[in-house]
Image (cartoon, rainbow, N blue to C red; front, side):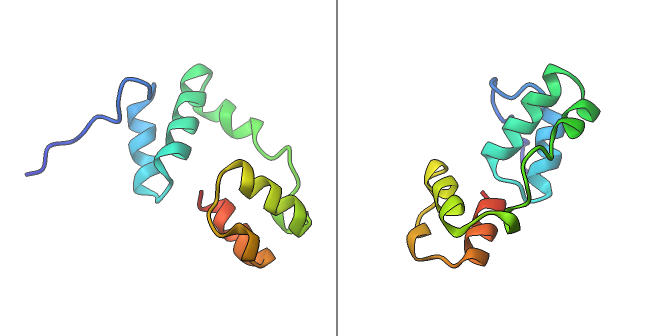
Amino acid sequence: MPQEKSPGPSVKDDELYESLREDGNSKEKAARIANAAAGSSRSEVGKRGGGSPAYEEWTVEELRDRAAELDVEGRSSMTKDELIEALRNH
């Protein structure tokens, strides 16, 4: 039986972190959400989201700029749909 690994001391809500990882979220994204939830509450974190327009409303240039901030590889040759998918899966 494999031994469960702790995500580390920097993750404040291990249970939520593991749930998010099982759902396919990246380690970075799962840790950010778990830590934000630990600072207030899980329901409060959900209410804070959604302040930015959907990626579909962004220009390709805006999407590439955001991808650059997140260091997404291959962004310069991606189409708008590919950029959106890469950003959502980061």
